[in-house]
Amino acid sequence: MNHPKLKLAQEAIEAKGWWGAHRYLLLRRLSQLTILLLFLIGPWFGWWLVKGNLNYSLTLDVLPLADPLVLLQSLLARHVPERNAIIGALLVALFYLLVGGRAYCAWVCPVNIVTDAASALRRTWDIRGGADLPQATRYWILGLILLLAATSGGIVWELVNPVSMLPRGLLFGMGAGWLLIGGIFLFDLFVMKRGWCSHLCPVGAFYSLLGHWSLLRVSAVKREACNDCLDCFTICPEQQVIKLPLKGAKKGVGPLILSGNCTNCGRCLDVCSKDVFSFTTRRHSTLSPVETQS
Image 1: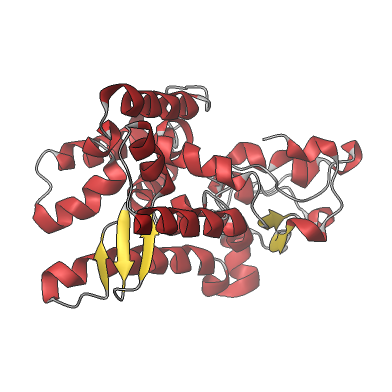
Image 2: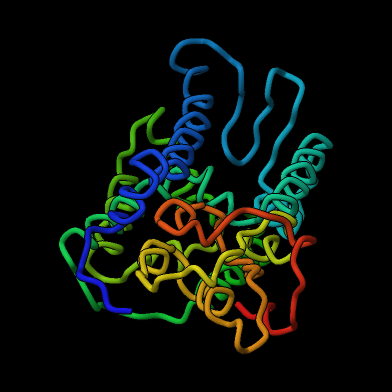
């Protein structure tokens, strides 16, 4: 079906209202900013609800949470982690095994706000084309940082990890960190569409591995209602995960998105005027082997 060119999500806004077309985006921003604020209000105001950072934190002096990727690097560097770090990493890994590994990217990571802004400007200014890299590049970078930890005896990646640098910079001053964050923004805006998050970030690569087994999923449960507006494809940060579940009925492919690269951001739910997509669990769909493809 041919459609006149409309503003992204315009049909959804007309069908569901502005809130209905942006609810998951706003909820994600609330989640990201709230988590960031929890780490900042202690040093800023002395309200120590959470102590630490995204690598390791202690909530209300009781609940330890730790980044399992940092723990893995620490083990490879032959460091002996404390008991709380092990408990915290296991709790975080279990959580993302349930809700989707790359939900971390969409709902927690502060750098996602920067890359989403670049993506929005890229659409607004109609910047097309650009460089291209295999999406597997991020897995090679993940392998490299693990190798560096094993060979150097240190967690080298954390010296330049923008996910760690952004909140740390807000506390102590960004300095050269602004160059890295600004470079990621400009790279995504002018050089490569979704270049950092979808092609280079090893943190996203790590959490995508957890996402292969997660329980919470997005499903194109009403795919027969699709009117081919392409808004879901335009807005999706990992466009390759949508096509088969949405259009694979004739190939015997079920509607469930099983790729670990899905971020469970919910934007496809927002922008679809026909409510084709919804959150569900992998147990509520009949699956075919083809669906395991990324």
